[in-house]
Amino acid sequence: MDFGLILMYCIAFFGLFTSFFFLLVLFEKKKNLKTPNLKQYKNISIIVPAYNEEKTIKKTLDSLLDLNWQKEKIEIICIDDGSTDNTGKIIEKYKGKGIKLFVQKNKGKGAAMNAGLKLAKGEFVACLDADSFVDKNALKNMIGFFEDKSVMAVTPALKMHRPINWLDKIQRIEYMIGIYLRKTFSIINVLTVTPGPFSVYRMSFFKKYGGYDENNITEDLEIALRIQKHHYKIENSLNAFVYTKPCSDFSSLMKQRTRWYCGALTNFLKYRELFSREYGDFGVFLLPSSLISVFLVEILCFYLIAKFLNKWIEKIINWYYIGFDFNNLFIFHFDWFMINFRPLVTLATAGFLCGIAIVFISKKISQEKDKIKFDYLFYILVYLFLFASWWFVAIVYYITGKKIKW
Image (cartoon, rainbow, N blue to C red; front, side, top):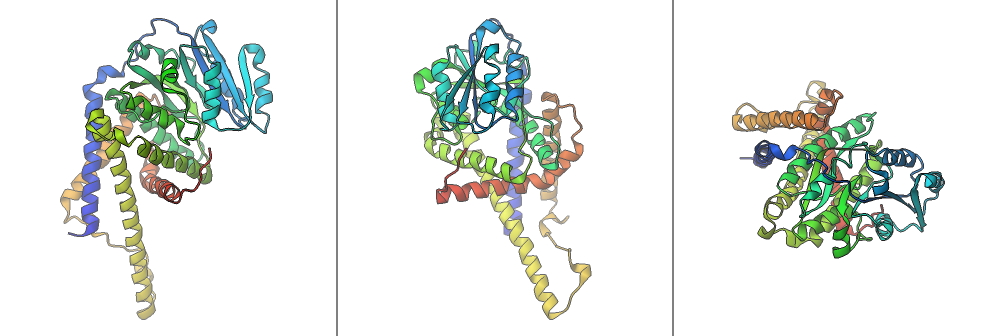
């Protein structure tokens, strides 16, 4: 049996197993999809770290002022992290509306958040990136989860705002599926990240275990792993909609994902003790399967590229000795997909149908109203290679120690 066929079987089995596992979790625990009713308005501080966000900061602040919450129980703190554009001037105009502004030299998001934590007076604290904005009922649909004293953070349903080009639309599908996965992960308490766009925390956690790691390039992932380390819970609200702008060009998207994935490698190593039975599903299933999936995708893409290049080299050699044959220019024989390998075809078909089911469920629970049929087909065709390229660059950066900035 050839290496490519073995690899395809491994990926098909692994993908089907994990997909069915999370689908079963969702159907078995359907009651967990409900958002707890808000019993009492709490004092909450919302910190907005901002660096050169003049294009989006107004929409961010307007959305916070429009939150459906008792005004006397909410404070909004903006940390201008040394912006060189008009971000600070725009925030200044909101000071009369009760928004507080603190200006510091550029030190990064972690330092900006810690500055905000020192000023915050609320029982709960939220972070909102300055390129995102919230639905008016988002906070109301999150705080009820904190009735469980073991819950230290609640994450929102993060959606893509107004996708325009093909890259935006791929990200929209990714974020939509992310809503489904984040909720499923929260049911079995295996969430690995508390996103910057409007995750809410208990202030007591920061007082007991310290603030943000200012040298960490994925501080939201580090905080989540720290919560998991101390055996607390991270919840997710399907009805707390938060919108963020997409990275609309390949360069900025590559930069973002390189930071995310390089940060993931750094934090997985930092919290390597979490890879143990002591942490249940989180330690023995989620963390290992995350790394296995990356490994399999990288190997598959390298294999496909090598196979493709090998075929082209063969054709070039044939042209040299035999002559040019236009009819065979784009004909490649990938034997693993031939009808002789019916088990693999069956697995691939099952995987495709499972993917469609996940997208259908994701669209429903994310309340996505736009049509996504063609976006999903495009997503299937290119996302695997995009994902592999992001991880490849991140691994190179990590191994070489190349510095990544926010």
